[in-house]
Picture 1 (cartoon, rainbow, N blue to C red):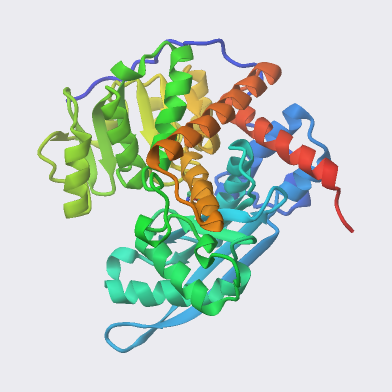
Picture 2 (tube, rainbow, N blue to C red):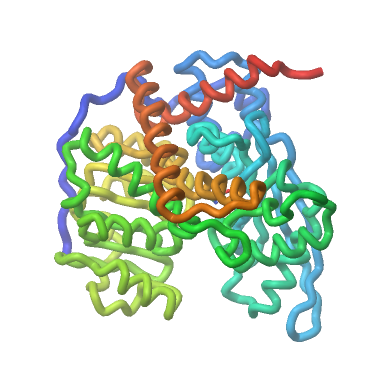
Length: 452
Ligand code: GLU
């Protein structure tokens, strides 16, 4: 069935300051950033530089934040099950550590490359600052398709990668975590390999990585944390859009960890999932799609295709589905201008990192669709990673109630600081979230100075 997209009514006044299509900054050239306007790194850093101009951030801080501190690339051989060796490429980019140790996930994906990892590490600096965490930003990954390797091959790949970067990470220096394609099991192997190789006398070597299984030093609530944070953010922001969380309809793009948890948690609050998509297909329904049954189907079959509780549909029908909330929870740059024109929702809650391109966002804002930016909406994962790290370094464990309550405090505070910046600068929410993140970084740099 097709529900034709009609532009939703604007629910709030259009902000005065939103990034223009011809935005330019001398920092692009000064830092030698790629000139291609579709380049992910240029797009993500560009959004921050626009916010920096709106708030008048001193030029030197813009320069510092426009490039990562360290970019580590490694190549390492791994013996495959057939006895032959294959060479793998891995990355760890350490963007900034002014607020604390570098922090961010490890992506295991065949298409991962340096530019993605740089962009994602930059976003971690902004996210940790906005969420009020004592961390900077980092990101890493391995160019690998985990679906194409046996468990024992993945174990050797992950352990060899850990050995290759072991001297560049540490519980008080750089703390990786899961991201797309990496799991709690992978984190357990990394913790074990790191403990074997490194000297962490008196400290808990488990604190080198977060997102571990609960049985291996992980935290209760970490697995669902990113999805939980998306729903916490919606709960805080929906009333000003005239929406009641217990009655919203929603669609989800990507039904992996973030999308499936967001779907399940929102459904438990009364929301009704009407459309869902992943790498295996698109589904629609006029009734609620059962998020728990779908998550079960995905864990058995690897994707949403073949799920009996909804009808298969086209990509267009998925995007045009009339819903209150659209949750992109897959990869970067998936909501471009054409998708933004098709969407028929009131608010986009970014579960993935950088799912909306700047041209896509301009279309959304013109159509009066609110965007809850990823550095706010998906900060739940790294926030509960922080709680896991605290539990590791203090040899304590928290119950789930405490984890959820503390997470909610961070999400409320981040949302309030974003709203305050929006009010002060009359800007869109992404610009406001960057301004709130930059304000904290600016103060830190002003106090500590740049030495020598
Ligand atoms: N990969 C997640 C993110 O992009 C979590 C990072 C972490 O827990 O350190 O926010």
